[in-house]
Amino acid sequence: QVQLVESGGGSVQPGGSLRLSCAASGITLDYAVGWFRQAPGKEREGVSCISSGVGIPTYQDSLKGRFTISRDNAKNTVYLQMDSLRPDDTGVYYCAAVRRLFVRGCSTNWRYDYWGQGTQVTVSS
Image (cartoon, rainbow, N blue to C red; front, side, top):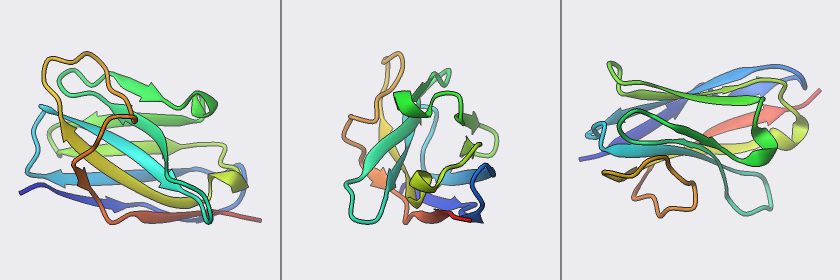
């Protein structure tokens, strides 16, 4: 049974940093993992993903250079390092997983089968 648990959210001032963690159980290197966020009153959007296998990252264009996704296979955990945070980064951040074999790269437009409960990120002065 696949289970994803996010942690690391909180409140931070603009320009600050947070590192989100997605602890996964029941998945293997066959799974791509994505991060998504939902701001108040807005639709959920894809932030970043990391592919199965060798772990190729993909980012939403507007977030490149500020967010970094990584994967610790020994700990079965995917991280999202968020730097230079802005108020419009505020929202609930979710991680999700989908089993994808023999696919180079990943996309947050895929249909992800497993979701965590989310962690709140608030950027405010």
